[in-house]
Every structure is written in structure tokens, then in C-alpha cells.
Image 1 (tube, rainbow, N blue to C red):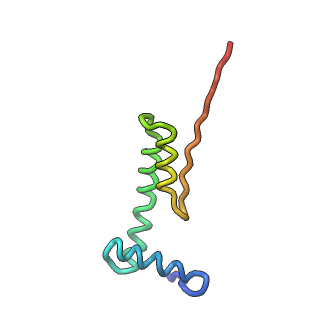
Image 2 (cartoon, rainbow, N blue to C red):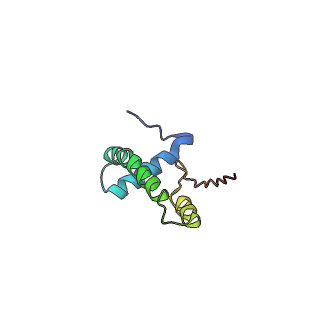
Image 3 (cartoon, helix red, strand yellow):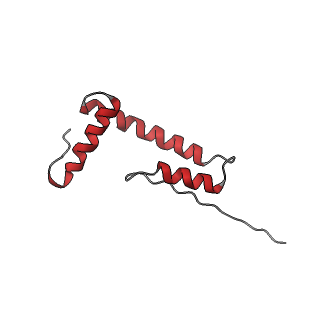
Length: 84
């Protein structure tokens, strides 16, 4: 697999190099590691945001903190009123 890093895609080189620095490995292993980790991190973030011991404000702050350029978390609340 080849990943374009020229021209408009130059930002990819920086992202891959940051991943390699983070994982302390070569660029190929860094890309694979990041691809393996992201789904786990997203699932963990969803579980945290679903906790009922957090306030709506806390959930929104956590969602904002965990959101990135590629993954965005939002917290919605639903209010239901039943009348007889």
C-alpha cells in the first residue's frame, strides 16, 4: 500500500511521523498500530460518554476534549414528558 504525501497530502507525512514517534517504531508499524487502536479508543469514548454518573455538562466537555479532526463526539439529551 502506498500513501500519498506530496502536494496537498503533505500533512499525512507529519501525521505518520507523529504516530511513529508516539509508538516509538517505524512508520509502517505506526500506521498499523494507529489503525488497530482507533476503533478501541472510539468504543471506550462512547462507553465513557454513556455513563449515567456524569452530568450533561461533563459529558459535553469530555466529548469536546476527545473530538479530533477525523472523529467528532457529540452528546444529545432527550426529554420526554408524558401527560394523561
